[in-house]
Length: 375
Image (cartoon, rainbow, N blue to C red; front, side):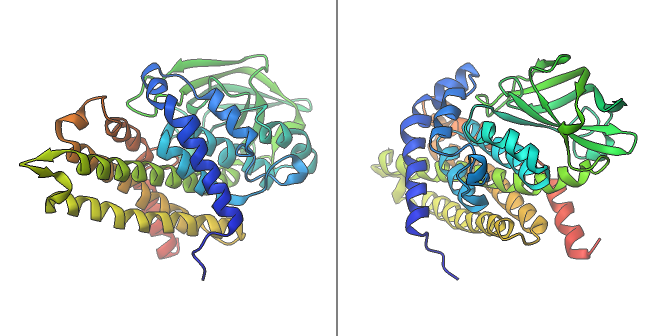
């Protein structure tokens, strides 16, 4: 068992850190305030190979794997959780299912455009009555000769108003089926744009499918087997969100240490008070555990081993921790932490969603329990 990063992985981590510090962080506060999507940051990350991290080189990707993806997402989320989730969805929820479930022809046609950053991908599973209950989809897929016609709205679509390409789940007569749809398809449109508490630089929208025609070669996997694809994909996506949460926690820890060393009360720095020391110490210890759980789940996915349990464990640990850490970071900053002068208020808002999307905290506990009890 070796916990030391190889020279190559350390170089990638350093590259991601530099990119986060020099490109992502300087625009993060302004993008959050303006609700501005990080499209330029995404395009620049693609130049570093970060848009195709799970994609083999033969399809134009960098083929670095899930473990390296978590390292990159953590570093970028430390600077901006919105940019982190944009990359997580693109890699884990779009590139991954095409690679794992697509035909060779689909891989050759679609993955190079996604891996290069020419296309930004989005994932359309949720609906008004189908959030945690993914099997309750009502969006319809009807055969029309060799084609399919998709009808119905999809909700909570990350990057939906900036994405070029979507993995969409709809209910066919044979069961839920996965389809691949371009944003330029006739009948495809963006509906309501959500105004959110956090990750405001990441857009979340409704998409509307009004008799969208999809050819048979844009069905992903087998007809009627879409839920299997959705759940397999979410295993990887949950690892990505765990990495995002780890990055937010690291940002909270860094900000807390810096502020506690600079801010004085009663004639001495806050860092000299045991109450503050204990908060920071607990945050650091919990962060180490969450990071290890996340990287272990990613390693299992890379090895092709079962990892549903470990993915849910990682997301549960990391997401609940990020919320505790953000709360403590604001507390350490006191009144200043409640203002926009310091970034911890943004971390506080951004952390909240990590316990909700790609499976709520309650769903993660359910998945873990079912795995432990064998049902």
